[in-house]
Amino acid sequence: MTLYFETYYRQLNKWGEELCGDHVQVTRRPEQTIITLADGLGSGVKANILSTFTTRIATCMLREGVAFDEVITTLAATLPVCRQRGVAYSTITIFQAKPSGECYLAEFDSSDSILLRQGVALPFCREERSIGGKTIRESHFNLLEGDTMFFLSDGVVHAGVGVSLNMGWRLANVINYVANLARKNYSLRAMVSALAGTCHHLYAGKPGDDATIVGMRATLPKHLVLLTGPPQDAAQDNYVVDRLMKSDAIKVVSGGTTAQIVARRLGVKLSTAIDTMKVNLPPLASMPGVDLVTEGMLTLTAVLALVRTFALSLDDVAESQMLKNTDAASRLAKLLIHDCTHVLLMVGCAVNTAHLEQLPQHLGLRRHLVTDLAQCLRQLGKEVTMEYY
Image (cartoon, rainbow, N blue to C red):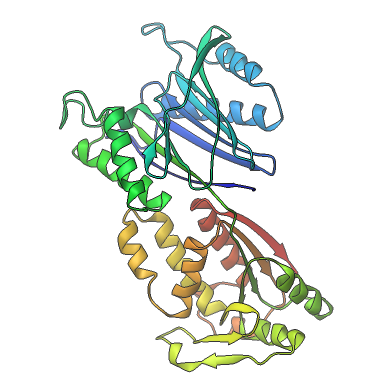
């Protein structure tokens, strides 16, 4: 069984600071997923620079196959030590996971990470050892489908110190909180958002420290392929359609001309559901073998607006309600946001003169639309690949 590690994170800046002193980096390779979270000492620009520096050094070295001991030795030799406090200028959590579920976790002066399985917090063994003069806590374990982990900066467990709670929220309470959300079948994004919202509330809207929550869930890969636009060279029509149909994925075709090309190649009838037409949005269509068929530019523009709104929103419940609409844009946005982990965007580069003459200027061209859409999907933790024809 091959696992995919869905990730999502949210951050709260210390009150009065424009930059977060924590930094997160997620790197995906076929052989492993690497998550690094660094918490720079203090806050603001200095902490941001140090935490960013830390994650990028660690991620770059690990990605190139450098041994972990050498990574820590390099960080220990590179990062300065605060003269007053006698501690490193940045803490770091490093998580590596293979598609088989085999995982490695290293924590250096950072908050304990949390592992949930079926709504129950699982303890895992941590062994301490010294590398480059630094005490590192290491864990080796295996994840199963549905397991969820949280990697936290200190600002989360200390939420409310001196404001609503004398000793802060404390790790045990954070664990109980997320375990309760897991038992209610919250999505990963909803859990991270709820945790961030509660931290903000405990700080009375004025965080006393940077707070970062990184969520990770082991799931089975779910693929979606979106074909939009005819190929620039009509000789590629059959190849593109065959590539779409051979994929073991949710299949979406966006664009009237594109749908006609697919229907002709498959030898099937293309039907339009007039009753699905909405104000400013063309109706859905259907054909055998394809899961969703929509109009092109107008619909993709509306989809981009929905996905972008969802990616930036702090209110997951309200935005999820929005996606329950039955129009073409909402249907496609829901598939992209909730029903897949991997998205392949197959983009035809033929120029439709109608787009230049009839559509409003703000709609832009298809290639720009799908590029912006890919960026928003990546913000939601999707693995996005783009192909042009």
